[in-house]
Length: 201
Image (tube, rainbow, N blue to C red; front, side):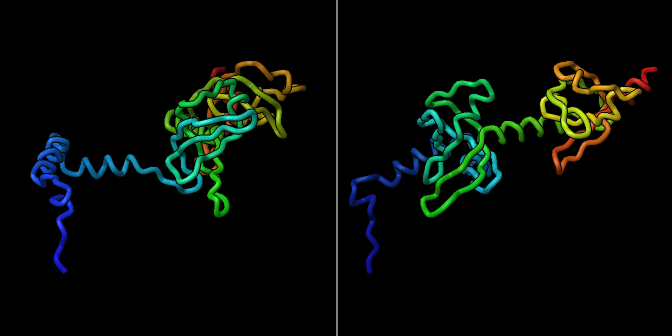
């Protein structure tokens, strides 16, 4: 069966197309085009951070275009809790939590993406033995949570040289502490204010 030349049938000059293609690719180094194509394709694996664009929102949900076959949904309160506004056209980083059912409903989380990015930033800049300062946000079982960009744990036994009567009194205060341990796998950091005070003395 003879091959049809579709370009010729459409009256398109093959040499013109090749010339235009060369002009577009002029200055693009070998391998760079492939890298650009790889960068433009999002990975839709669960627990992957994706960039989306807000296309619509209601009182309860925000719909995002993430380049998937269906739009993704984020609960509206994730913006409200962060004290942020949402508008159509906003670019947002979100974590892909699940793709459910045949309809392909895409569940996303802005909060979890923000938390993961914050953890990545802290883990790149903070090491065990470093001194950090943060605000005490709340009391939990066994100690306090301190916000240094991510919530970290200050055990009650490490709050001071002598254990204070009520550690909840520190809530809202800035404390400077030493980093005792960083657990990358569990995204957990343990601090000691006591050790820092002892060293300073």
